[in-house]
Amino acid sequence: MVRCYRKKNFNVYSGDDDTYIIHNMSKKFEDGHTHVRNFKTCKYIIDLSIHKSIPRNSPPRVIESLIRIADDDNYIQKLKDFRDNKKKKLRYINKQ
Image (cartoon, rainbow, N blue to C red):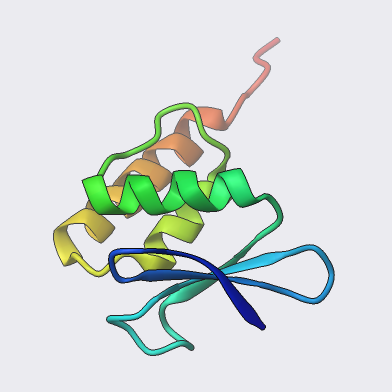
């Protein structure tokens, strides 16, 4: 693994098969890393985590990645609540 990007306490490593690993250096590697396939998405996730923003129109995978690399407990809880509310809204029941 070779580090290809760094911003504040986040490092991005290039993987073997065109994947990237985001690691929050303030957490253990096992607890604070996530795998991403696109470099622009890595930068986007890091910026969201630094600014503690919740992406409203992003795929659930981005939310899960943010939960893994975030280090603020309040922000993590907000992300989990948003994820749970979004799952509830996605259910569709056809009443006939």
